[in-house]
Length: 265
Image (cartoon, rainbow, N blue to C red; front, side, top):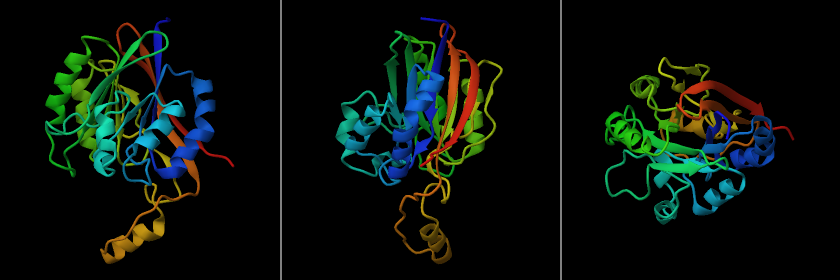
């Protein structure tokens, strides 16, 4: 075990195009960056809306160690029971008591290093949930009893809410990585207390789209305000995410690198 641990975090995987990007690109990216753990937000991996047990298994076979999610976690009912019996997929912890599944997990790397993963969801412009700040702080305390390395997926709409949570948890977690908007931001940095932060890791899917969906249907929805079935776009697919390097002993981040690569072929 050396003094550094690397975490690869993959932005929201959107539909089959996103899964194909993983299949085609992840082996090379893992080979280039040598992460100790691979985390991916998979809540849009089933046609852009939700995730199924079969797709979760597919992602794990593609070398995704832990799957995080968000507000679309309940879109596919067949995932409910799967959440309750699988520690490699989490949903936002701040859903009310009684929701299936867990919001935290601990993954043990091949090196023996343990990495805590915490999934939270924002409340601004989203559903009414328990406070992510209060719930998050309590969860961090529990995870710190096992490991100093904690990665937070903050699934939220508002930039301000993500930034505020990162500052609130600065020095107590290794990284706060924003998800949900499907638009990768260029503000990756390490905060004063040693927490890596990016407002949004982006998405793995079609960028010739409206946040991963086919443009025509989305435009029609805006023009008519009528219900329209959205489908995943397939053109110009990209792999987006971040690599965070942390001090294994302190859990503090020493580097955060943004990834953005096109699928060729």
